[in-house]
Amino acid sequence: MKHLSWKRLCVCLILFGLLFSAIGCGKAAASREMHDGAGAIGYGSDVKNGSYAASKTKDAAAADGYRDGVEYGEAAPASSEGAAEGLDIEAEYGKDDVRDDITGHQITASALNDHEAFEDWLLLFERRQDEEIPHFTEDLLGGSFWGLDSRIRLKIKVTNGTDPLYGAVVSCTGAGGKIFTARTDASGVAYLFPETYDGTYTVDLDGRTKEGTFSRQTLEQSVVLEGAAAKKSGRIQVMFVVDVTGSMSDELIFLQKEVDNVLTRVRKDNGNVPLEVSFLFYRDDGDREKFAFVPFADISSSAAYTSARNVLNNQMADGGGDYPEAFDEALLMAVKDSGWKEDRTTRLIFHIFDAPPHTNSWEQDKYEQRLEQAVRKAAELGIRYCPILASGADLLCEYLGRQGAVYTGGTSVFITDDSGIGGGHLDPDAKPMTVEYLDDLLVRLIDGYYTGVFAEPVPIDSDQKN
Image 1 (tube, rainbow, N blue to C red):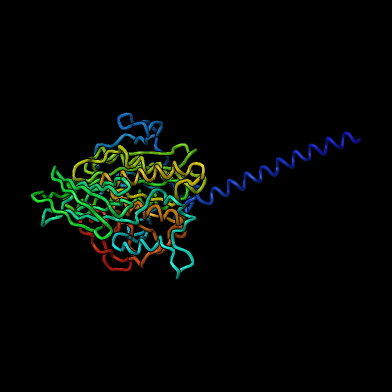
Image 2: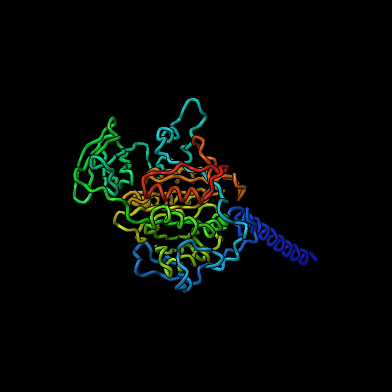
C-alpha cells in the first residue's frame, strides 16, 4: 500500500506541474499580445487588411552583403490600366476590406522641427536645478547616446550670392577626426554634427568648391559659390518605412486608404513633378515575414505603381510578440542601396512606428552601430528622415526619432489623441504645436522639402478643406 501511494503521489505532482506550466505559457502569450496582439485598436479587431505579400523572393539585382537572406514582397500581377492620377482605392483595387467610414481627415498629428528651436532641443540634455530630472535621462541613453550626439551643430547656408543652392555636398571634420557629410536642402542649408567645437569644412557643387574652418563662435556660416547655377530639385522620392506588427493596424489602414490622396495632391501642387514611392514593411525576429521591400515606382506609371500598391494593400498588422522591433535593421535597409537617385532629387523617409529597437545589454553595440550608420548615411545622401510616432511609443522612440530628424534636417511627427483613434499617444517635451490632419501634414512636408517653403499648418478645427 505504501508503494502504491507513493506512485499516486508522483502522478499527482506531474499533473500539477503540467497544469502550472500551461498557465504560465498562457500568461506569457497574453503579455505579448498586450503590445502586438492581432486585434486592432480604434478601428475594431475585426478589421481585415488583406494578407501577407502573396510571394516573397530575393531581389538579386539589389542584394548585397547586408541583404543576404532578406525577403522581399513580390506584388501580384499588375493591371496595365488605371494608373496614378487621383485613384479611387475602392474602384481601382477592390479594397472593400477597409471600412467605408475611414476617409480623409481622420488621424490627427503635430509636426516638430527641432532646428527651428534648437536651444530648446539642447535643454532636453541638461540636468537643470529647477527640475528633478532632465527629459532624456542617463538611464535612457547610457553613455553612448545611441551613437547620435547632436549637441554641437554646424549650420552652413550655401548660395551663389543671390539664390540658395540645392544639393551641395558639405563635409566637416572635427578636431577628433570624425567626418560628417550632409547635403543642402531646397533653402540651401546643411546641418552637420562634428561633435567638437573646432574643425574644417568643405563645400562642393558641380566641381565648385570652397573650404573653411569653424569654432564655437562660428557654428553658423554662409558660403558663396560664385557662378554656380541655382538648379531646383527635379524629382521627389518618398519611402514609407512601416512597422506592421500587431499593434499598428490603425496606421496601416490610414496608409492604405490615404497614400493615393497624399501623393496625387503633391503632384498637383508641384506641376506634376516626377514622384516615386517605395515601401519597406518590417516586423521582428521570428516572424514569418520580417521584411517586405517594394522598390521605388513612379506613380505616373500604371503598371509599376499598381504593383507597389498591391503589396501595400496585401499587408496586415501582425506579429512582433514583444515590445521592441527590428527598428534599426529596417532603417539601415531603407537607406542602403534602395534605389535613391543621385541627382538633385528631394528624398524623404516617413517612418511610422510605435516601438524602439531591441536593448539587450549583451548586443547593445550592434543595435547602436546599425542605427548610427543608417542616420549618418541618410544625412550623406540628403534623405530627410521624418519619424511618425504612433500610439504606444515610449520615450526612447521619441529620442531616437527626434535625433534622426535633427541629424538629417527632417521633421518629427507625433500622432495625437484628438481624433480618438487608437490608444494613448506620447506627448513630447516641446512647445505647443498645431494639431492638424495627418494627410494634410504629409502633403505640407513633402511640398515644403521640395520647394524650400513650408506652408503653415491648418488646425483641425479650421473651416479650410482640401
